Length: 446
Image (cartoon, rainbow, N blue to C red; front, top):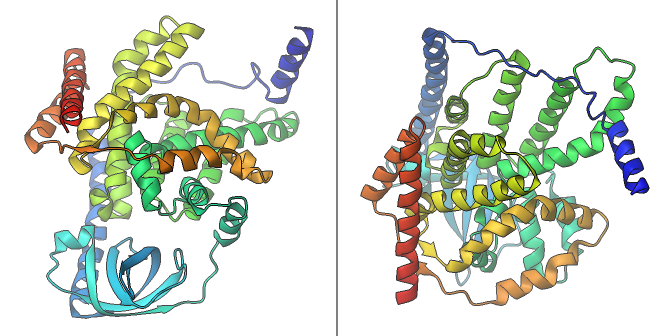
């Protein structure tokens, strides 16, 4: 016990715990409605400007246009033919077919010429096929190439390497891994989002805090919370650039920036308003995000989290303790899992009872993700390879059930009412449980 007390004391000294400046109370200000109107008008104006740029690109593509793009993914469609998924500098997505066999080109910069046919502007905002196109590689430096090879060398099989490429660099996931991730409900853990931002930020602070507080002793007038928050945002932005502005992580980064500004100003603003501002900011950068499924699911997930904090989180904090905390963590993951099912099934119909595994794995992910990073740094990246290959080799049966549009509208209506009313929150959870029961019944009958 003496050793543990000494270790705890050393940690408190290294991380300046219980001495760090904190602002105990936030100002609760009634911000004039005209300020919100001005802010929303500016963001909507930026969205319209982005939409106009995309329409000009759309008109140019109908006539034939040369543009630069990044190869996001390519796969063999038919014998001696491959299909490419391309993203241009404005975030537009295009699909094109090219004859021949190609080496690994994911992440490469290319110059493309092509036209679009039978593609409306609304479809263009989602994605379009391009025809009569030519493709030529451009000289570029792949900033992920060294790290991809560093990870690949630690794995005998390519599937675990591909999983970590997707987990660390937002690369495209191979089909066997996608099927297993769908069956186990792990897509939200593999797709880089706010969850990853929180874990990465925690790891960053663990590394940087001892060095910061060594300097802080000489600049004790500095507010440690604000300084560390700024450093964390700089780190997150560098990672955002590294993964090419992945939409879900972009939403999380924008929310972190707005939260930091709120903290810096000492204001207390409703979380739902913060989320709405982040969505508008993201759309002002790229309107096409409105049709990006990953971005929409990310926003929906955060919305459900805010509902939980508003109605249940407050109840749990009133009775804080280790057992209550653990109960809260389990309850949180269960409710978010249930509430997301009707929304997810509007886009993806696949269902399996094994998806319940995502609840304990989401809890364990807070430890597993840092362990995976540290293991690769020290050349022990194959630590979980046998488990990954066993899971991929398992043949999961999946049933199919789309969420009807009428049910989704009713469910979302209750979710919005839940911002104000507790009864609506419990009704939304009940609707989600009923929909899960329907999926389970269909699965049992299949």
